[in-house]
Length: 180
Image: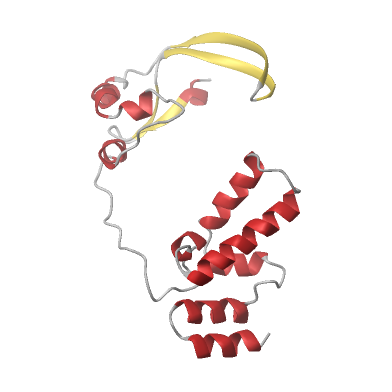
């Protein structure tokens, strides 16, 4: 089935499949491959639309353990300029992430508390992939979602109080924290 090898061809504006030799693997896991068989697939002829791209975006075609991604290469694949990002700063809201507030005093304390809780949940001494994956996910999650996921440990009032303090409104923050 050629659709198994399809990708969205941005320059052409529709799905395509690139010809070549693919490796079909049957495995118990990604690290325990039981059977492997090469299969030759005929392309649909649209490969030429990406031929010039191979030279412009080598990081996407020659994957390594330490790829060198840059904005120019991503824009070439994306086929248009990226929107300009505005710097994150005050006032912080519940739409900001832990990563956004990590350099504030309260953000540092909140990050430490969350990392401790990850260790408790996953198990002491497990500093493996699972802990890193959960920590990375939490760093990119909006603070409002952390409040929802915390089972009451970080209530809306508590979150709003911490945000008020991060934004320099210490008395308002203390009042909100006291409501808990």
